[in-house]
Length: 264
Image 1: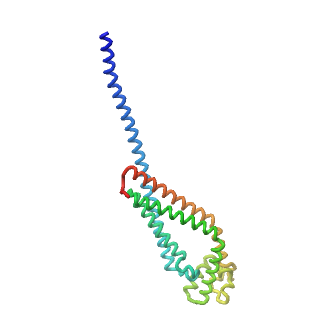
Image 2: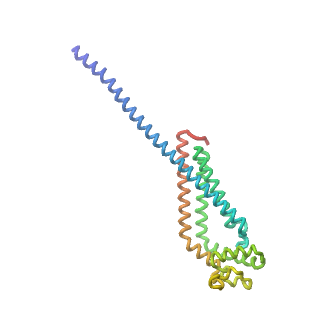
Image 3: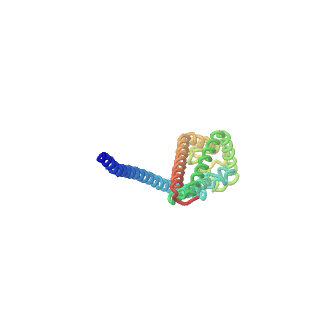
């Protein structure tokens, strides 16, 4: 009987260290797995961070290029000769504004990702979201009021041509010469729009005759020809903006949970 009691006590003394040892091994395995998971998550977020930095830096360079091209066009082309009502809001001005917006937003995204700044990342997200809404609204309005816009452009071009005939400035004629030579057209609807003041740019250098089509028809043909390309470009741009928003929000949430980066 005494031997049996000693045997049970010995089994208990052996089993307790064994259980503790097994629990220690299990805890170390779980801790190692957790650390490995955290390292992988941290590496993925670092990759996301630097990917966002590179993408925003490239967008910043693109914005600067658009800004420079818009400034060049604004200095060298007098758009009031073509569309008097859009003297201030013309293609050059739109490029200038677009370049400033792209450069500013991409710079915010670059700084926010690089410094892991939650305030800048959230601002970047909200600006991209607002820009996406503006683009979609503009595209919908353009599709809904396409005929009205076409009529308004024709009226404005006619006013610009009448002003060009009344003002025989060389600079004014140069703008019309550039459009007519580029699009192989003459006048708004045809050569009769110029009356007796037909410029040399209306003459085709190969046939030595007046160009048949008007510039409005040529512009409409050009837009119809590139409509699919323009649509795909707009969709691609929206996809890039959505990806930028997803990246920014993912990085923002990770920084918020981990307590890293600057506070709001």
